[in-house]
Length: 203
Image (cartoon, rainbow, N blue to C red; front, top):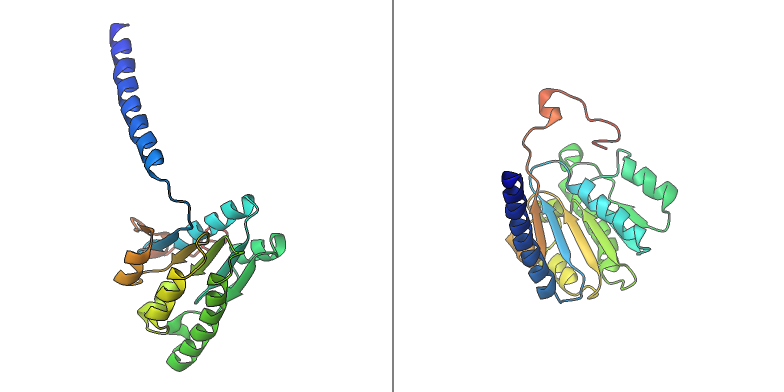
């Protein structure tokens, strides 16, 4: 019984210290404004995480806009769900497929600029609580879009608007500007073991 009490005492002390740290962090976070989140890294799950935030935002009745760079040729579960169950979400897709499939730099740049014009409009729309720019980092990495123009639009967006950007890389300037940067890392991936992409899991 004595050892059990000692374990409980140590646990209570540890949890009390953790609670104090959490409470201090909550008390210190007093700014009320939208955030810029960058989900990057080599691993799987960046877009999935972004669409999780879309569902969360919709749960609160927020207005959401989504722009997908690269994706859009192959149908995805998130696209089906949004179009069938949340038609109020503005979803725009560049729909050119991956750059190694098109092999047309001039055409990709034109498509990226057309798509960015839609994204830029969303970033100027104060009624949108959340804007997702899926795979935008590739457009910067391949220099299909002017980085300063993209960064300026992100800086000048409405104060209450939150933005989620996904994709590998993105550059140091974007990482510096972002409020939250998360790097997704692969430990294992089924695809590398010869397992086909799974409907409802991978797309």
